[in-house]
Length: 287
Ligand SMILES: [Fe+2]
Ligand SMILES: [Fe+2]
Image (cartoon, rainbow, N blue to C red; front, side, top):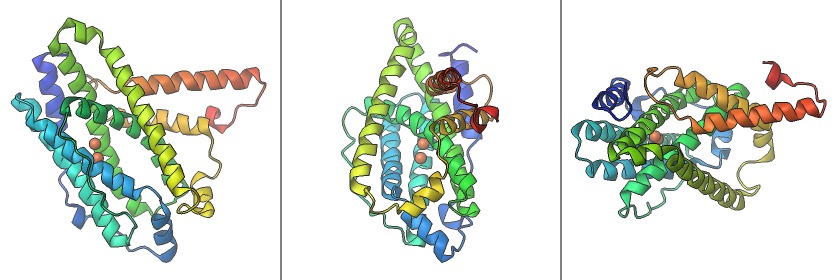
């Protein structure tokens, strides 16, 4: 299948629409939580940010969809917009049900340069999801949150994985349609957007640290979540979970490649470094 061909467009849009799951956030099997679980859920400092991000995502994708003329792309993007808005609804239902402290911040103005905004958003999702895969696995293993809640988040993770697979195919298709130069420069263009996404994430982490310093995420909660946290193991988890989740998609579709490749190179370097320093391989490498 030639990337940028009509066949490619039809394949990634069809796959996206066929893997859609129908559900209503209100009727998901939200569990009743005991006090300890409720406290842990309430201690998570980023619900407000997640809520805002999903609402913003819905607005950006919907606004970008309006600018499209190709009916096949338009229909698939409209579906993604509805899914993002449903993510926001899901988070809202959770906030209300469990009394989480996550006020609804007013959305920023997204009316200008929607094309760049959509691409920034798409590459940002690739970064968030890659790191999210690793965090999700740690959260799952540490049993930080009840299994029923994690199961609900699993639905969300799967949809985010669909979004990024759709996005990288859309990006490759769109650039190829613009001509050979844009097609040839795609790796560079992607690198530039990834660098922007990483800069934004660092800025957000800094602001979050200043805001939350010791306030919300009490030390005991952190230790439960991050007990034995090890950067290399986290990267291994991001990498292996990414491969596992991407395995569910049709082989002929493109997948986000930059971050897995970067992680792979970093892991190789870390192993080499440890071997040179004469450190015994830890469980992360012997797994
Ligand atoms: Fe989302
Ligand atoms: Fe998404």
